[in-house]
Image (cartoon, rainbow, N blue to C red):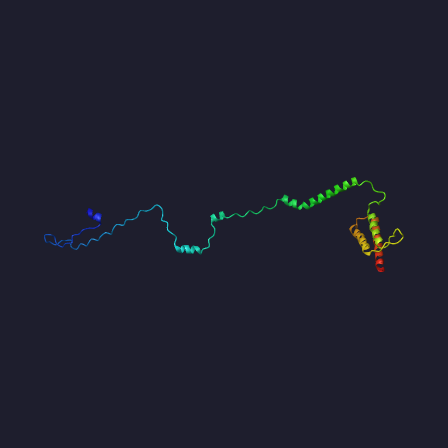
Length: 209
């Protein structure tokens, strides 16, 4: 029996008769079937086997558009954050910049005026006083001289220059427009009368040409 267990085979006596010639009872006993050989399983490894990826998967992977994973996104440079909106103080400073420049210019002009009055000295007796009527008289004298209305030292008349006369008449017209509503009654009356007279003289001189 020990040999049967070790080899996996059983020996059966298939003789039909006993040694004394009598028939045996177990003649019809089926033949013993050989046990299948024992399968020796390989030792199980602790680590799972690493199998190469199939070629079909590789070919499919070549046709698939891949997107960067988390590691790729970490390697990419991050876009700079948007600039914060300017502070209210900065916006106020930008809006007030023209006013600040105007204030500086006004302060500079005031300082220059003060320095001028301190250094100009007294009014010369040979020159007329600075006034709006003096300005009107100066422009009117230039226009009259170019219209041939002024007398020369030898008793003659100045030559007529209509282009120069028109320039000074237009200067008086500009003064009338810019100072309208800001002149006193005398200044407004003198300017209106002088301008009307010079315009009529210009028309007359133009017709003589």
